Image 1 (spheres, rainbow, N blue to C red):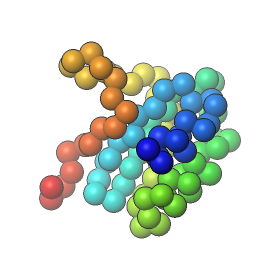
Image 2 (cartoon, helix red, strand yellow):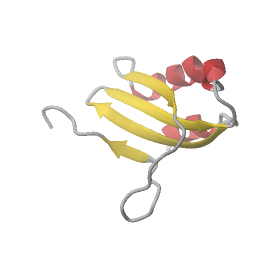
Image 3 (tube, rainbow, N blue to C red):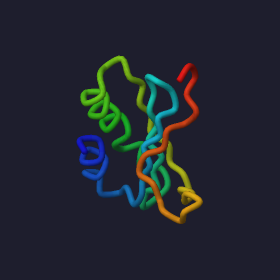
Length: 86
């Protein structure tokens, strides 16, 4: 909940997905209102998310054109990538 609240506080984010790319790394894929929007607030948001997750956790923001839906047709907010060792 804290992660989604921090992300949703940025008005230019239209859609997002939190991706756990590794045990200690997260990526926030975002669709924004205009290309390059994340340059303005990306570092601040990453800092807020590291404050929630822990300073040893890597966090990055990536602008994308689309967020694919699951086979069920639903759009998930969280995705866990195939993690090494787990």
